[in-house]
Image (cartoon, rainbow, N blue to C red; front, side):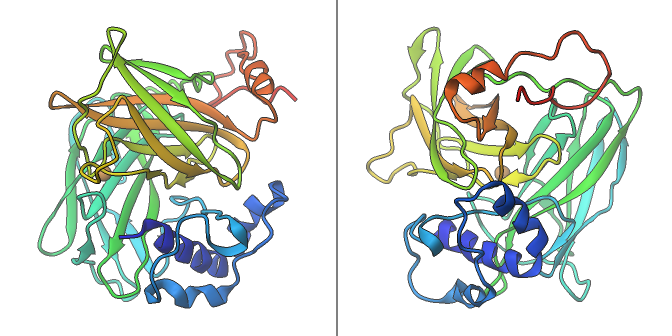
Length: 329
Ligand SMILES: [Cu+2]
């Protein structure tokens, strides 16, 4: 399984189909030279996968996923479009092909046929779920969203059909109730969750691959017995603040490969599709429980100092806007 190749081919297909979306990344990042012409589309089933990053133009730009409800010939048909905040409800959906038929055959990725992410528009609430598929192709899972507001539902899957690429489709979900948008937390490199301290090293870069390392500790001691979760020691999802573009992040190494240790460090490779502010969510498993640590990071800050100086919250404005305060430059 070479996620790199699939995603590269997917990038090319997406570029061919949705040239404008791809153009966003190009416009803000002059380093991107190769617009990934449509001819690359045919690659998907070909020759052995090249190493990630060895692709077109010497580096790889992965397009953002999740911004479209329909892409690559598949559509996310979200049957539940509204629920009540704070009340458990069944979320159900169907993935449909070009002919409107429910897709019932998937390729497993990270141990599952489909990964479902539910995130609030203000990125204050995040869920990584694994719904159950009925024989007719209907997926369902109970959800309980604590706060009212707008949410985005992401389905990350690969149809089993020959030549099909990994896709992340997104659809809106509303949770009714009194709405109080939360401000995006300021950038952080340490997160405390359920008694664990998680430290983030490395920076997310626009249009360039970079390594992100997360180190897990508890009571000041490095955790060296993380448990495999979804075929890795951690699962990292990055969402762009402002439009909730969904980034694919690849774990480096996997349990049992002879070199990857069960902590304290978990390594990932990620590419931001543009400058901007992103929220990173790390799921890791320890002593039978899954925990989620969250980080706010800026991609494209010229220096660490700029990153730090742009962290200051913008005064006491209580305009009730979602997301982050404006850029400091
Ligand atoms: Cu998952």
